[in-house]
Length: 565
Image (cartoon, rainbow, N blue to C red):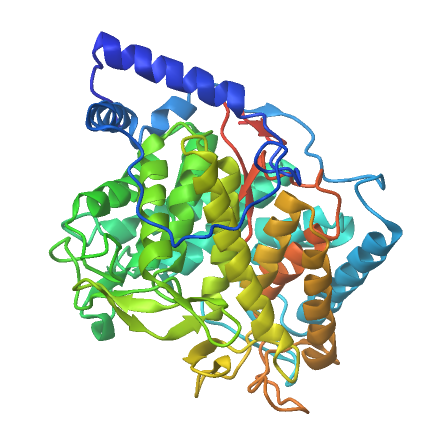
């Protein structure tokens, strides 16, 4: 158990006042078109600068307070879980229209087309190969069932939910000589089980989550500095990190497990489950940073320091680290302030150092960079994966309780700008579908990066559409999302499911014969929620993990869950 230092009287009063303010402010409805009081959003006219939020004395006192409450998961384990019906059946109201309902049912129909073909041709395997009517296994854990289970519940598909839970109860066995990805198994399998448990109350899901969570934690055993290995054997506990990464672990993979293990710890009333994952954040926070203050993508498991690259990215290998800093703060009811400080520092640095303006349309392009020197050297590519950042910045601005209005406006506008270029990645494509990566172009804003013309049914752009619509009420995000859905229906739907495509610039398309599990877990879930009333999984009550599995925000009162322990 993590025990905080005994605070001084002054610090104790500061903590108490802070928590009171947090509790009083926490019931603010995030899903309100009026984000910043009642005034209109103002686009910043000057380039952003790294801010100094406090005076030296205030900063020192704040840092002391943050240190005293940092990573203190045990505070959330004091009361038993109680049963409460989740708000999963929204009624038609002024919040929704007949057109919304028509589109929502169309998304649900698409989900059933994907699910039923998976059930027919790949049941119990990881993913469907819809063209060959076969399966592919890379985790060998029935991944689509676990990834899609909470989507089944959210869509109120009772018989399909019953069948999936029955498979989990009777067929899912983690006691196997099987080496799996620590990161992917945590976000998809553990995250899927925990989310479905919170929404359904089926205790077998928590039992399975405890089993896989305990096995995954052994990824920490082979590392002397508390940096988990990239893979772990579910039976033996043996693991390793890849040779190609210099035997290092990847930033996003070791810092995108904290939500899941914190939720598991709370449900089991056992803080030890979350201690090692949370310690990773503390370790990274203590390391010297590069010139920009941002985090490189590799961390050595043998030394506990930075690995063989100074690259910084919000694409592959880096992306969800930044997302989880914000979401860990939100998950804990805005109490763990150090996560918020780390998010503020990194989000400002990203905005200041990684932004490139395109020509001729002046779009906001989120480049990668080399972290060695200032000014940093940009790597002029942007992954589709980075399109989650529009949602992150908008959510960060809407929930901020520290900064002045101009700061929140600037971060919100940056989120909108990033979402706009991601929309353009779709709308400028001959298929209406975005490529995996774009490169900066001096006279066309951007072009698909050679060798990365493919589309894998990815969710990040529709995730940002969903969050931006919930926060602003701007109907354009619904229209943009519907355009993406129609393009998927036209080019990715095949007779026996959905498939990624090899080249988004060529019509007719050729398919890659893989129905990714995250298509059911994320892409279709976000589309369904976007056309649903905001009372369905409201953003002031739920935090979505990086695989779109919703977790209930921690409260001081017993957790609102449909389960009992």
